[in-house]
Image (cartoon, rainbow, N blue to C red; front, side, top):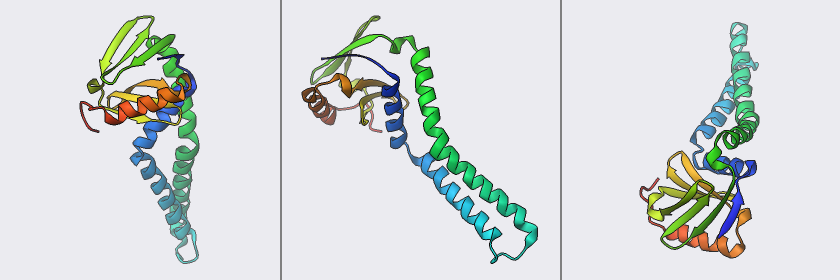
Length: 170
């Protein structure tokens, strides 16, 4: 049994784990950034003798640097802002909650009531550094922070999630 209130850091870790799981776009932007910088540097280099396309080289260089800064610096900052906003706007995520589980289901009690979900109702699960994420759809999940669990409960939840039959493999 775990009793906790969700914190901004729980959502930040959950969003980070979700992004790591779906890292295709991030790798695309990183690769594009490197490619644009390389093209820009090539065009500006002495190997490319045409001064008329020098502006194009600067444009590629600027685009590459912009994509790199967005990917490496701005996206992590936006995740923290998004987590704060989601937590403040979603009243269902606020307040104390208690989670208990068995081999067949998880029960979540909040001030709004008690809900029991069979493990088969979840599509998949993901373990972040500080949270367990139970996906009910590809972009919606329930968080269980590890800080609210004992080491024995973490091991037990890993065991159950490892053998659970999910409704759809992702």
